[in-house]
Length: 579
Length: 42
Image (cartoon, rainbow over all chains, first blue to last red; front, side, top):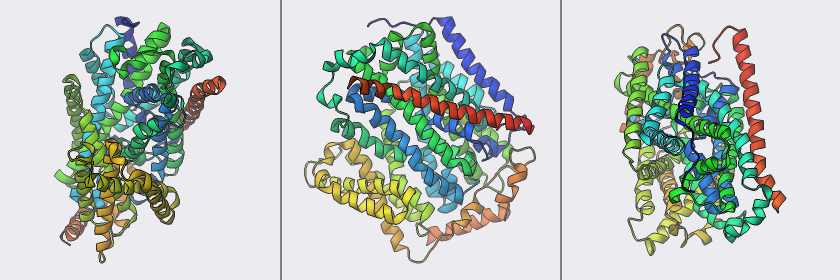
């Protein structure tokens, strides 16, 4: 298969104009001459179920996840898509109990980093904000690369033309109204994406041979690829992904932003719907990889990322190829606009609002322009990294580890009133320090260090499973599950896990950060944090008339007056840091 | 086995269709309510 079916230039231009023009039209319909700064970051915190479920689903589904699920199906066989999509979906579900707690203590916040500032102080905030910025720029770059590659493959246009067109389109409809435009257009994008999935999967299935393909193509699969309980798939794909996506769900600002945007009583409903929507979509798209495996298709240029476009070009008629094109553009645009608004809110709330101007002096109008300028710079950075073929994989691994090291300190900070800024900061640094040599195999793990790494990684298994249980069942059950799973895994994992550096690296980061955080927190026997303070210390920046919730929410942040709160926060944090 | 694998591949678009219906229905309801109350949906 040397030459793929392509869409003509005018058709691609028309599709792009329809897609981005439609998104821009929706954005203009809701735009205000004078946007509200809080609306620009979280839409006012009262978004309904329809939009928030659509937005959560659309944001979590990105072009790379579609490609990766198909790759997993192609590489690991019939269980491959499950080991990508199911765990990713479960993470949305697992994060919702924590999400409810976060909203309970900080109902009017904009970013988790902002809440960490209120809870601990600057170092914790800047660690989280820094990792968020890195993660969002990487995600933006990855989406641009996926779009550019798609346009290069399926149209007469080049990769560079593709990334410029997509970046300009996304920026255009997101720039003025920020988060409000992002979530509203997510609805249209999710309709296009999910609608395309409903049509494309059965069409490709029957075009590739239908049910008989499973008989005629069975010889193309190894026994592991035919096994629904493949250990290869679990250890190489599923297990590292379970560890990674828990970190991703906690560390990713796009998820946190939607958490702060949805009406508080709709959090559970929204997250459950997004779980099912994401899981079915990504596992379904992953089935295309399984079909390619049964059909004996080899990826173009031996690049598995070409698999989905290749199948589409091979099996879909021109009209459905257009639908496929829109599906991929929709998936990457919905995530790219979320990344832009996430970056904007971090720069607005965490950098300008709390670290440059200070909450009492932050000018809402200036904040909005900070957000808009951030979006422009982020788009330029994404274009630069995408066009210079910058290898983002190592950075992605690094950010994943940083988030892994942050998970326990962040979650415990919302529940345990003894966790200090020192415990938080030292835990994250310890997690990273243990992660790097294990993940990148800087040290020889064949001897005693390998056993030490395995012991930590085994504790990491208990930490991950314990945290998952904690959200739903509370501390006693979590402690039992964490302890039992660590002890049960130990005989199999010790002496073995270090041979899987990706998995080991993540687990070691979880374990080290947890051990240090717990140890330093237990040593704190005097200071206790009052969680009610977070509600006072976070809140609206913009109480001007005309904002989405100006009248309804003025009382939340203003209970003590911004200036007084700011001063109290500084004093409290200074006191804690000194102590 | 063939029937099971066929079901395994085709069940996902059916679930996606169900989720899509739930989201669209909720959106339309919210949009109508916002229109009735004379405010923006977001």
